[in-house]
Image (cartoon, rainbow, N blue to C red; front, side, top):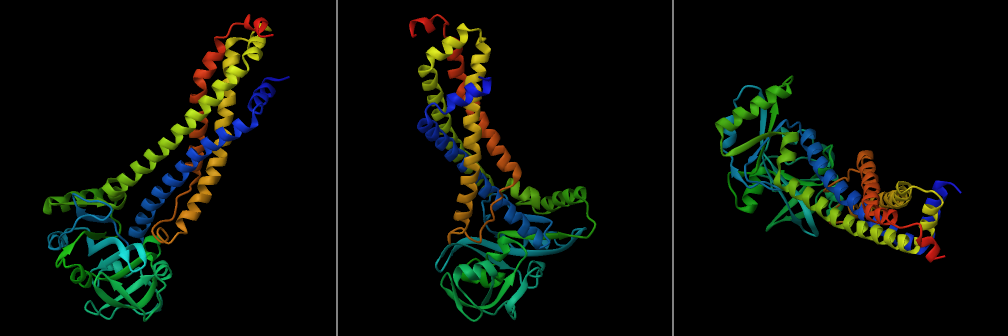
Length: 372
């Protein structure tokens, strides 16, 4: 009988208990995959959306969230003529309910600004000017709201007309209701208020020059914060909160798995006291006994991780298909996240087995005679 045969036999001695332990680990790892994958996907979706609009720098309020607080649109006039700024576009973005959809991105864009240029018409037309009471819908938003060209759409207390369906080159763009900035400002009663300025740098601008440009913007407008696209997402309070919540919830689920594995391995040690003592009596070193228990707990973690990754991936697909979330994000189930989840599961198994392994190594060989 080989060492690994003894390890595997220990695992399948109590198949029901082993199965329940695997289920506990799997649920914890599924939470990691689902929650972290969705938070990463949410962040990635906004980043891709900004890139699709050709944005290099985002100017927003210093105190912000997922949608930063509004500030005066006159800030743009102070920064627009800086060297290496090719174009600017004022925006007012909200994540709010629209008709039957509880969460919808409402994007008010300065009429004639470059943030309109990435929108590719699928059907209908663009609004004729900034005063037309009309909106265009991203293709995903149109599906969620069940709208077509010519249908009315209720935005707050104002009824607009859907004049076009567009494709924006990113999930966030496709999931948005897009209208002229001045029209949205009038609807929500915030004249001359914006919560972001998209800045496009001149072609050939390097990362170092972009960083210098952000410093120049903040010198001219100290009440706002200028960040490159990557910095904007990493510093945004809303995204940080989402990350913290996803990892915090995941860690609680993992803790349940740790306790489950530890309980299983302790029960295994108690039930196999005679067997372990016999192994010690026939020459097994205490370190080898410890490795046996640790291998068993690590294998529990590994198999639980495999099942958890599969459950998490399926769960994410189901969640992103629900009307409440659809169109807001595309989960980021990258190989690195799936691999990290399995590593976490194995680490959970090993940590959970440390105390039971140490306890098993403290048994005395003479107990084999007493329990024989």
